[in-house]
Length: 250
Ligand SMILES: C[S@@+](CC[C@H](N)C(=O)[O-])C[C@H]1O[C@@H](n2cnc3c(N)ncnc32)[C@H](O)[C@@H]1O
Image 1 (tube, rainbow, N blue to C red):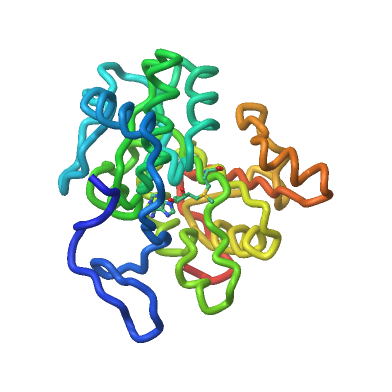
Image 2 (cartoon, protein in one colour):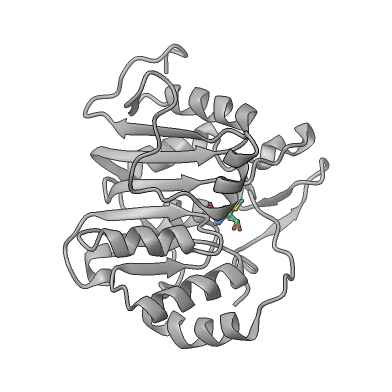
């Protein structure tokens, strides 16, 4: 299966952005090269740790075979960070969502090699996974690390972190659950801060940007960026028990 292909009715809108079932996709599926190892592990592992996309809420305790806090990750890329976090936190269950086959194959390989029992994968558009599969108040946390910044202004509509997605995600978090985003793109970091601060069910755990939580390992790419003097911005918000008043008056 090639990620989100075939998710539904899609078409190019006048501005060249692909719309699928009413939302603009935050990704473009390129026919990237899938290595033979990625292909092999994808085939061998997705039967075991893959969760097929369905329209209908899934029982996450049944998916993982136990009751434990559930953390969703959107866009895990090649999955190195996901596997490292899942290995370091056996007390939690991690549901990674990614559309890109090489990345899914890569995380499958890491799971097979390390034997971590608490990682599952959905290969599909995370917007639809959240909307269709995840029950309200089901998640103890959500990670969105280095979402595509879509730097050109005409592509900003493709950015994943927009008010409707964050409202949807806030509804899927338990009260007290957290949303952790990180980006190395300063202008996107400010936009994320604005979007998260405008969501009445979320409150910031820091005055604005947060120190990097210990559980998020530095990636190689990030280490290189930091050596070159580039910044990284972490944002950690929590779901409130009662919606707060926001500047937008929502
Ligand atoms: C820039 S990469 C970052 C990958 C990884 N989080 C990291 O820190 O290295 C963004 C990833 O998000 C995935 N992605 C973007 N939009 C997505 C969506 N709506 N659903 C699932 N994955 C998505 C892309 O395929 C890509 O792998």
